[in-house]
Image 1: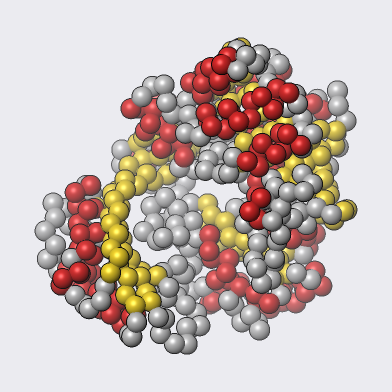
Image 2: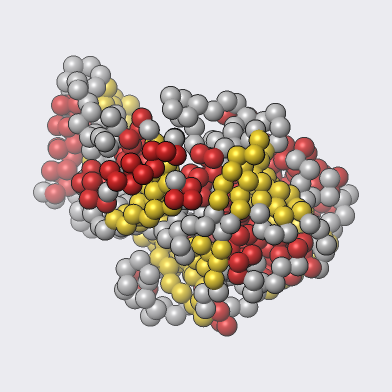
Amino acid sequence: MKLYEIAHSRAGDKGNTLTLALIPYDESDYPMLCQKVTVDKVKNHLNKIVSGNIVRYELPNIASLLFVCQNALLGGVTTSLAMDTHGKTLSYALLEMEL
Amino acid sequence: MKDKIRIGCGAGFSGDRLDPAIILAEKGKLDYLVLECLAERTIALAQKRKIKDQTKGYDPLLERRIESLLPILVKNKVTLITNMGAANPMEGARKVVAIARKSNLKIKIAAVAGDDVFDKLDTSALAIETNESLKNSGEFISANAYLGVEGILRGLQAGANIVITGRVADPSLFLAPMIFEFAWPTTDYGLMGKGTVIGHLLECAGHITGGYFADPVKKPVEGLHQLGHPFADIGKDGSAVISKVEGTGGVVNLQTVKEQLLYEVINPFEYFTPDVIADFTSVKLKEIGKDQVEVTGGHGKAKPATYKISIGYKAFWLGEGEISYAGQFAFERAKLAGEIIAKRFSEGLVISDHPITDIRVDYIGVSSVHRTDFKTTSSSPYEVRLRVAGKAKTLDDAALIGEEVEALYTNGPAGGGGVRKLVNEVIGIVSTLIDRNKIETQVTIIES
């Protein structure tokens, strides 16, 4: 099963840093996501995209995870040669991950 | 003093739609309308327009937005706060006055300036992004500090119906009217934190009303063609209910609010603005009705001693060329074409003034966006578009990239068509910090 089936995501950018929120549709899936969607697993899944450190924040109040990924946007929004310079589409890259 | 105010957000970026703000002003029963129109790079582009013509440099859509909104704002007594002043708030304000006079509308406008620190910039300071001296970034175009609520507050205190600013931290556009209406002390960092959370939730407009959230399979949203933009009913205690005008498209629910709360947040325990270091982790959300989400909690601690400065610099010329392949083995032919062009640049066969070494080849429809397809493509796609992009020192050199793609017409491989060529100057952004005491916020009041 892909993450897409049980969670949604929003990507954001600050310079060369990518933020990925991971939000389960059903809040009762939050503990399972905390357990299964570890920093190592995300790093491995996004290895073609993120070359820097990843920090995971847990937000139990809103049953959501936030991944902050360094060196993920090929130098950053303003100077990258990519078409999607912001990395706005990368929310769906995270949701491709197999659980 | 009021116990409750309603603030709407009618634009979340410079190019946003015009009609949602009109609907908010007309039917939203607003006290304040905010138009957030200044992304990181927008102000550097505005500065370039100002250098060419000193009467320009404000948001290019300012006239169109104000002409359609002003009569409604006056009729319904809605105060407008916007950063559409961009690189030239004073000229933006004069433009608004001219529009008001033409329609015989009496208004008072506050122009907030002081964010432009181009002349004060210490170029030996280190860039936050690279930890290198700013000097290494190339020729600067603009340098603007992210101001806080101060200038907007002074404008509101002077009785302005419209406050037009240059660079101000986005949440400050929303926090200022809360401080003004509720007489919040700006040293009450708990309240500053709560108000900043509400500002952050509203600032991207259609994000929180289900626009950029929508997915036809898992997150279907009705009426996206007439998406409503949000407003918040804010209480004196810093709690709020996020909603939108009844009858507009879109949705406000727990999911849309969660997505926006975490958008572009680097550390949810410490969200830095010029007004406060806000804590987003203590925010609580509750659906209390159709398209109504209650926001409580949120906190903050003392504001930072420095302002962040965003500096625009001339980075490079971007050259691009695209060509399509279709039918049998389309991807294989596109790959061959991409390899040919990459080789011609790397082996120095393209005659240019300066070497062009930074070339990127994308296969649109296969792997152009995520640089990988996570092995999901089972068969070869029917059509593929090849895109080649490269960095060059001059416009002429950048044009060579598109020309190389165009030359695939006769030089092969077979069946390429639909070439497009593009050249653009790219403005880069670096940031640094500046002491608060070096910044002087200026507020000018003009009346129509």
